[in-house]
Length: 494
Image 1: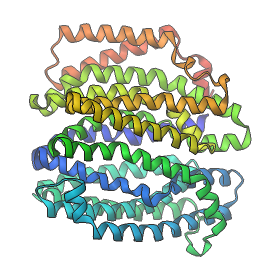
Image 2 (image 1 turned 90 degrees about the vertical axis):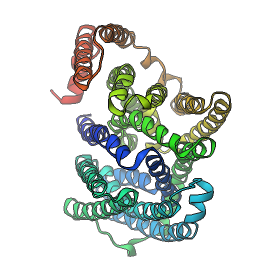
Image 3 (image 1 turned 90 degrees about the horizontal axis):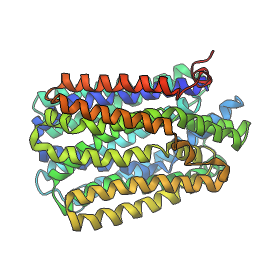
Image 4 (image 1 turned 180 degrees about the vertical axis):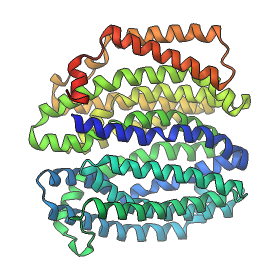
């Protein structure tokens, strides 16, 4: 448990760095390229999601197989899995990128519905596809690190990459290069990321050989048998956010894509921070299932929820209460629509984050097909409710429909988990923690009263507001004894 907690801390830290960066960067980028330019940049980001077409779930699969082979120190097998993944990717990447180059202009005009700056859009689509190739290559090396549960290294690389990317964004926009500069910066960061990942993997694991001649057909069959469902799940997940942006650009306008992107980035920043802390469960569950069986794996889920649930509950309550004041100061009163969207997305994201342990464990122990089925149904719910509510209530209705699909995904994953682990898993009982619910209700009431007394008109007052709310919640956790001594020993050791 200590190793899992250590990896969670590093994953948590690497994701946390994006929150302050977005705080400074989003208003700056909006000021430099405008609402429509930001919407176009967000829309081009859809291309980055085409990586699932050439991934086939192999990066996640590699994590699982490396975790199993590292347990038995079978380094020859690790090298064969790596070589097999690399050769497979190389063939798929070349084919996919060739298609993208040929159809880049029709994609910009007829799919993304870009009406102005078409040449810039085509340039960005081409650059984005190139960056996907580089980042997927680097992802293979990250999979080795994560599978060996050396996430302190992979997450350190991620932090450095994020900081350099932010600095590069500032520089190219300051130089007046606009959207083209953002594309060039993206390409440079991807090259640096690949070189750094290659260097680190050679220094950290001398036994790892990057040799394409170690390709084995039987390894490919073994990986594809597991990864095909991860690939299908990835393809289906790709339908949700990028498809939403395409639908918004067709139903409304590119400017609304920008509103959607900003609100989603705010809510997903918090979600990513919390979810990243749970990702070490993936290799840990694969290893634990190999050694101890399903019962021990479910105990890992319950323990992770016990620590995650109180923190997530409070984080979302605090962010929902502070979002309107923060966004008004941050972006200006003309972006009031972003405040409403952020709250809508946060509600859905809170329910969605609770299913992460079950989602990760099902993938980790080999039941990726169940995840695919749940994702397929969530995509259907997203499209149905988003389009239906869009015709009834416009843009806001569309976003509410998306949030509903996140809530639905929680119940879908839990259904399949119970199907595999049995009714003894008690999926919902762990969320009926009265102490956590009462503590958050007290914080919410006190925070509401605090907001009435002090008009949160600047960042300092918002900071004070969040600080006092946090102190109150920590005190309530102590008073209600939400965590006992055994819990703390499990995390930090004795």
